[in-house]
Length: 504
Image 1 (cartoon, rainbow, N blue to C red):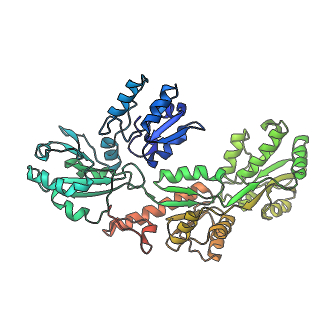
Image 2: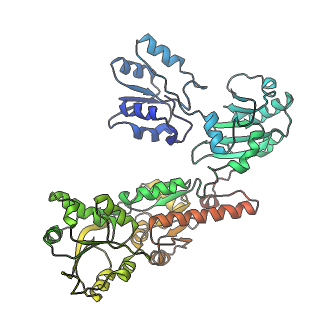
Image 3: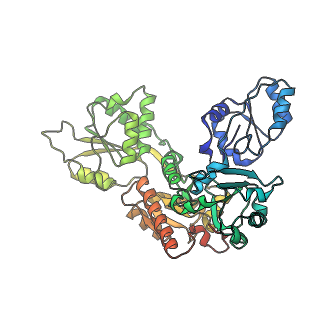
């Protein structure tokens, strides 16, 4: 099975299907680790042991052998096929997306557009470079990074002009991808300090010149940025997906653990009151509050129909989405600031002629502020402020994460509340001063500054999505400024003392 060029999302549908059926997966490198998420629980992972693989397949198990790129393109499977045939084991060859095309696409090089020839060669085998110098289109060279300068000289000696454009890309299709554009005559000078390692591809030909206009992957606003997301696991998923779309590498570090209230009787009485008509409104100030009420409903055999006749308010978009997933459409959502203050600003005052009941249920965290209660009371409502869940500080992250936080290994950290600031510093220490600090709003900024942190980015509105967008805009401006100054764009972590420099 072809594992593809590096990006785990480029795995084929057939490959993902078979990984889900496999009892044994044979691989040669940890690089394939992300692909194992397609496997069922309990799958056995074997490192490169062909005999074990064939023996298990002969017993009727589905065995998957993962190969780099495409299994038949410069990746011999002859030994594996022969062993299967000898053991009378049925086999299937599943194609993979080859680096020869995928890496060029990710580098912004149109491999075979308006050229008469597209040639792929393996430098690991003896090559007649004079023959390849006659290639009239795009020449792609595998396994040649160690001899790149010598190959360039051989192509020139074979008749290729020394001005012929060349691109060298390492870590293709991953967030470690970086590319140096040069010419055959300047390879020695331009690759001298690049620090290239395999897997890498050398691309020779005029198609390289289109990279200035077609480069889309390495020019993403947060390309390669390692971003710390200090939230609960449940909350960080959508935020991490958004960061990935900007080219970032999110690292989810839970700083808060959500736990049930110590005394559940208060929530039990609230749910009973909700069903029996005690409340006119229910106000949700977080997705965790929605989750807590939903779990209580399930415990009592109830569903969203229990909200019939009630008015429901949500403090923001994320909370509203959690309600909609539950089958409840909010009646009130702030049109401006998504906070308790924003909700109070649009909450209707109690009117004894229009409102049969003047009571509001507020299922919230144990550490919630009194802003909402005070505001609703002033509007004439009575509030039942009920502890739906507790937030406690999570355990410290592993030592490498703590060291990266304090040592500048992260490019940015996103703070979505004051508590995430306090808890992250408490369990892992203060982020390094090169790390970009992004906060969700003024109160979180104030808390960050109290801990001696410099706030670089603030969301346009208090939502996690807006925070990610603001960080992407910041990254784009940093990149544009570097390009305008004629410099190579650098991630914040590359500006710390001792950080490895490399050309892009």
